[in-house]
Amino acid sequence: MKDVAISMTQSLNNLSSDSSRDKHDRNGDTIQSEARTDIGTRRHGLHMGHDTRIVIMALAAGIPAVVAAMLFLWFGDHTSKVQWTLTILILSFWFGFSFALRTRVARPLQTISNLLAAVREGDFSIRARGYDRTDTLGDVMAEVNALGATLQEQRLGAVEATALLGKVVEEIDVALFTFDGNRNLRLVNRAGERLLAQPSKRLVGHSAADLGLADCLEAEESRLLDLAFPGGSGRWELRRTTFRQNGLPHQLLVLSDMTRALREEERQVWKRLIRVLGHELNNSLAPIRSIAASLDSLLARRPLPEDWQEDMHRGLAIIANRGEALSRFMEGYSRLTRLPQPSRRPLDVRTWILRVAGLEMRIAVNIAEGPEILIEADGDQLDQLLINLVHNGADSALTVAGGVTMGWRRSGDQLEVWVEDEGLGLPDTGNLFVPFFTTKPQGSGIGLVISRQIAEAHGGSLTLINRKGARGCRAELHLPIPATPTPQR
Image (cartoon, rainbow, N blue to C red; front, side, top):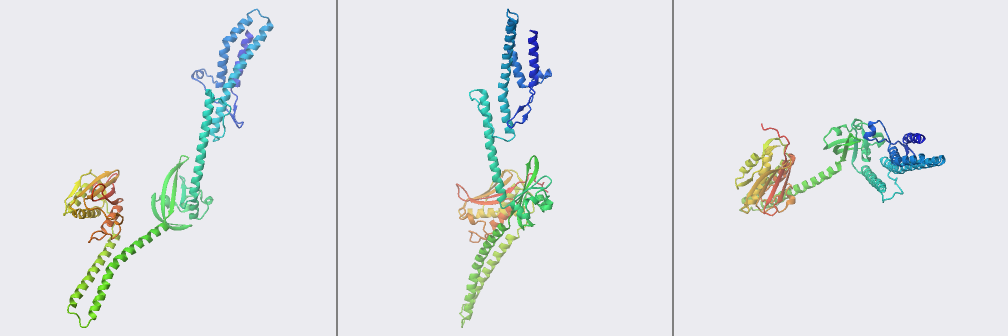
């Protein structure tokens, strides 16, 4: 019996040495197993692996039966040959099945460990084979395979999306540059190479100052600049933003050549200007030429008609009237180009609206009260803008004995001021802001154009639409509200 105990002790010592051996992954590389210990083993200073604990538990489960068998065998009436034969047989089966259980438990875990290691390294092609979906371990294998397949599809999609993005960046006709935190170039597309007249391998790594782009990185994030580069010069739209890569801040610089677009827009503006000027000049010069020719014919008669002086005065009066109209027309155009930049000061919205409403004497303007709001604006220019809107609304409302209502409200960080009339509405909303277009017999056609310029100079907008579900027109003025307005002086 003492020999049996000694044999069992030696076997347990061998198990501790066997559990320190490394497992091998799919490529034959050794993956060192990490020991997982529970609170009890840590308290005793023991560090047993999962395999060791499985074998110990298997051996412990068989200890009662083995001890009982040994007692009956060695203290019974058996020959020495039978005792040793059965002892060796019992111990062989005991240790054999215990180590077989260890292999049965450890092998699937090794397989799962190899699969997860492959997933961690980015190899999603490895799959577990020969598992049975009817047991729990088979479900684990199936889920690991499904995880690998999902990650493989996601990586394929990411690779394809990255390749597409790379193609777009390369082929887009906009210069793209990325700079790191030290303002050294890290990426440039083909348009950027053409702009700097050098290939990317000579550009990457150089500082923004060396490439002539330092001013672009210090300018506002979105603006137009006149720039000259080795590959071309002109007016460029600059857009700049920041992003992070590998945890470090980077800057993305985008330069779009606006020269061609601006020239085309300038050409369209000149065409509209020439068309309007030609129309107005012809309207004035045609009657002047006709009257002048008639007066010249009148003076050539011999003898002169008795009422020739009256005809002369009437013709000259027409020429003078048309000349004055032409002068007013040119003065109107000059007003469009002489609008000064707004001189911003604190302006109380309620006081401003009540002041303008009191200037309209032909009709009582109804006020829809709004919240107390203070903005930064040029009060004189906004007075002119709102007077134009109220005057137009009153003109329309008086034709049908309607009314005019003004009001204001806050919409996010925007102030919305509206003027509604109960007139006939707008016959043509597409030409409202075309210079000198007017539906009034005595209108100049520049009031709304100047009003919109004033709104845009203040960073806002002006729109006119026909009211929905009611007769009349609605003018809406949107102006920004500063986060912390300057106190009134």
